[in-house]
Length: 117
Image 1 (cartoon, rainbow, N blue to C red):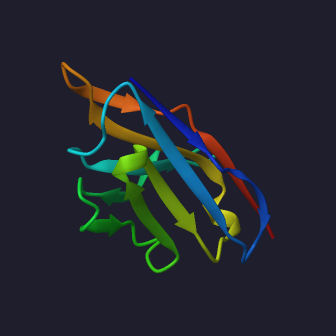
Image 2 (spheres, rainbow, N blue to C red):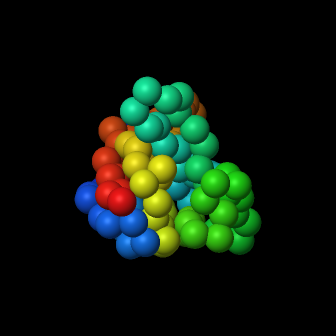
Image 3 (cartoon, helix red, strand yellow):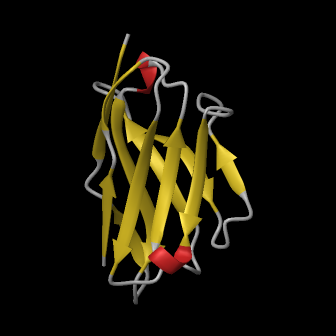
């Protein structure tokens, strides 16, 4: 089982990026999935969660109204649309989910997002 993030990069403040988290080796369709981020010198923090069917989402207060989490179970992929980016959004972004058999927690390798002021 593997989770692979992509879509990070360098963007100016106010810009947008769309991150993807592609799963292989296990279907994501029955599991909630999550985005986390870790800024330099800080602890990893939770960003957003989406339930298995995509009908329920939750966001950290710091990104609410600017970020949108979504998923395409047919493509075994989760997304994070990030709008109105701020320099404080600069971090490595990770996805995770409980997957596989036996089930365990998997993390992706992370994708760097850098927002310049």
